[in-house]
Length: 387
Image 1 (tube, helix red, strand yellow):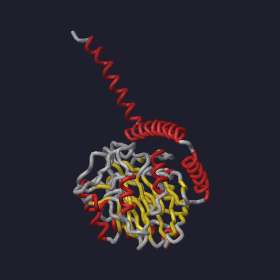
Image 2 (tube, one colour; image 1 turned 90 degrees about the horizontal axis):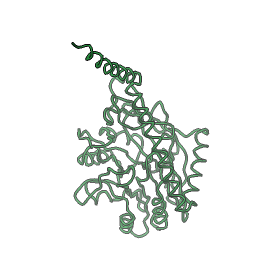
Image 3 (cartoon, one colour; image 1 turned 180 degrees about the horizontal axis):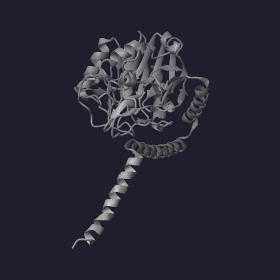
């Protein structure tokens, strides 16, 4: 049986109103017997908005996923609670109504940790990290509270123990840090320990919104981040809330290639590094996992095979990252990660500042500043002329 695993999917934004049946123009994707990705939002009509960077999608997003040909989605991610606890239950209902399987989040802890069975011998289990780096605002499921399945070694092993004898699981993790090429060393160690379990067939990760390295261990693979598979451009409004595309769509609206607070309606577009992803093909019979690069077009929401000028440099980068994951000693790796994290986010914050200034209008800011300084300079002169 051929299973395809893909990265983050958002069935909203510029995909609204488009033909989702043509959204993936990759023959190997459609040739698979089962297709699984990570749904990076809730699907709800709720007006509730969490106090965080919010990503929302209408219930019609479930139909989009169906038209894309997805068999199941992982819901273990940090945006599932963006439309409130009720939004989690609504998401499950809309997916079930379209016949799409789900795993990794639920109305209760038991439902969140329930596997999705691909066939009689293979299932998917999904979990989300929390309380670390860019995964600090995550709704974790409890016995009677909706949320995601928490990613801990103890919980994953407990769920593997519950599988019938001889059955295996593909593990889908939402972990790592956004915008980084490297994952944390703790994730490398966790992956090694889980791959050594005979019940684990493969590990696939998401959340960083870019491709990270691959760890090969005991003849199996852990993909730390598959990247964004189909994450269309979308609109943001103040302060940082995703909104439905205006109808009619404005001809001139500010654009940003980042994700940050905005002062007015802004079109958020992904840079190329966030539009390239890995599509993993897993043969359940042989247990062999292979991958290929795909890319989302910039101008429209469609995924196509990556051309050679994208594939070659990304393949070289993937090889370097994979070698670091496999061979770099822990003290060296952790120092490298810390330096990488510091530099990336130093540059990220400055890019955001420039984007916000551009959004406000640098010329307008300069004009207002000069006007205020002129008014302040004129006040003492006016006071000195009083009788």
